[in-house]
Each structure stands twice: as C-alpha cells, then as structure tokens.
Amino acid sequence: MTSTQRVWLTPQAHRRLSDELAALLAPRPVRAADEAADQDDATIRRQTRIREILDLLDDAVVGEDAPDDGVAEAGMVLTVRYDDTDEAETFLLGVRDAEHSDIEVYSTRSPLGTALTGARQGEQRTFRVPNGSTRRVTLLKAVPYGQHRLEYTP
Image (cartoon, rainbow, N blue to C red; front, side):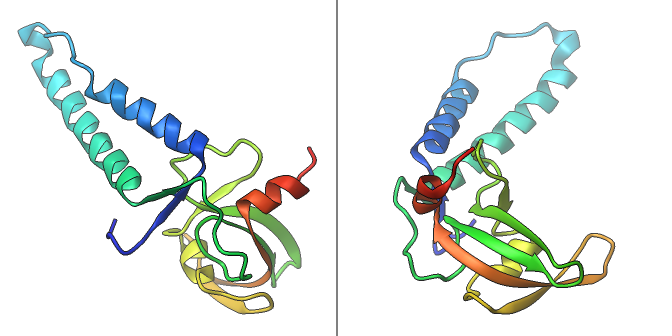
C-alpha cells in the first residue's frame, strides 16, 4: 500500500485490526524441534499478516466520513447497476479486511473498486471479471458510510 492511498476504517474495524495485531505480536511458546518446519511456516504467515495490518493501520483514516461529494472513493457506500442485467447492488467501497456486518465490502483494489474509484453519479465504467470478460456498470449513488448507516434499516 502506498502512503498516498488513504484507507478508510470505522472505529470498530480499527479496533478489531489493532486487537488482531496485538495478538499476533504476543510472545509465542517455544515448540519442539520436530515442529520446526510447521512453526517456520506459521511464523512467515504471521509476519506477513503483521505487515498487512501495519500497512492498513498506518494509512488509515478512522471514524471520519469521506466527503459527501458524490464521488466514488473509499469510505463511500455505492449503489451501482450492472448494465448487462439491470441488477442493482449496494456496497461499501473500503477495506475487505475490515468487518462491516451491515453491508458487503468491496476493496478499492478489486477490479470493480478500481473501475469505480473517482466515478460520479451517472457515470458508466467497465471492469474485467475473473473469467476475462468485461462488464459495464453505472454508478447510481455514492454516499458516505455514516450517512448510509443513518438511512439503513435492517
């Protein structure tokens, strides 16, 4: 992650990631020699995850809504229409690592998130799906996450 790309997190997501980081940094018991290979793999996975979390937390904007300017960016709840099916979907453009129980989260690094970042209401964008084909999507609405929560009724 680059220092120019800010990551939007709710206070709850920030707390969850901070707790996970603390658990990963806690001292580990020393294992028997025959478990060394498994321990090495686990250590590498743990160190990788520590770096991921540190990168996320380092670039995080916590508890602030994205500007209410209708532009698709991290921290905005987007409503889109897939033009080939006329299906609509609403999701948070943010960090998939962070849990948001009330709404689906799509990463800004995903093909859809990358295509939509910077889009304004009514703009069409295309993105490539895993099978290699492209889909066209129209941004119908972009509102800050905090405003979405006020409008949301389960």
